Image (tube, rainbow, N blue to C red; front, side):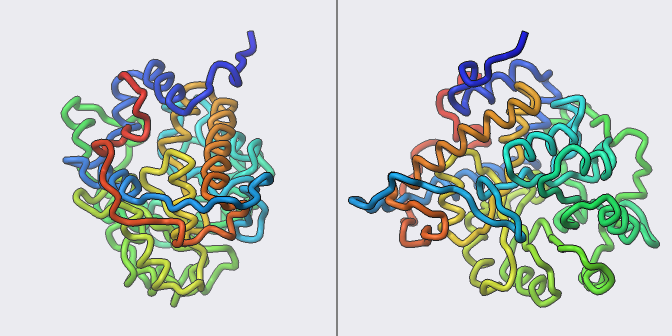
Length: 361
């Protein structure tokens, strides 16, 4: 029997509750967990919640358009599905399911190298934009081989994650003695290679290959400026959803200095705690070109597979349209910092789930 997702899911809260009901304790804690005290994850929400919106009135917003362009390709929303390892936890098809959902809706997907599906399988799942993200797990030509495979598969960009020089302590997993299935059997020495990743590797890749290069995990103006100087096309502001360095800053605290540092020379993506339409609007107004969604689309995937992700994104699109309309903005290009007000009081205690106040789980 076909599920009627349009009536089954009317709010984003319902996807989170459905994902919680479907996943076992290990899968759920992997999805919502972060590093050590989980302070960085909470600060992601605090940074967003501490920005208020300044609406204008008596403006014609009868036609609100959320479309934009990312790396030369038209998109339905200014978002992308961020790379998430172990997507098979949420859907048997893993990265293929995510790519298919993104393509069906009309936004890019970025597949993690921690995936059981090949680059060619991901490419075949959708004719929309798709990118490959790499953790360095080998020496020699390891990086080059993955770049070449991405190009051969017809993927639209290559991403190096740069905030994982050391693997963090994720205590929700540690206290349960839970070992992620995708990490079993991996030679622990392979993790040493990420520690040696430097700007020299970025320069080498940029010089040798004609494919858009994305650096994910930039968290300071200084590094954003260096990335721009190296010819990187996309600076991806991220703290790994709070899953790497504990006691880092919230992503939206970092974004303004990165925008200023690169001076329009590169495309900017930001992720970290973005769950609602107002979150997307705030990021675009602050100067981001797109927002990465991680946990949010995993809720949809766990709840109802690729169609669940599409339905979730439809609701998110409605939220973005509503927020823009109530701000008095009809086009994304018209959003800027004049619509933002800093220093608004915190309304709810920040947690990874505080964007969904109706939850009772």
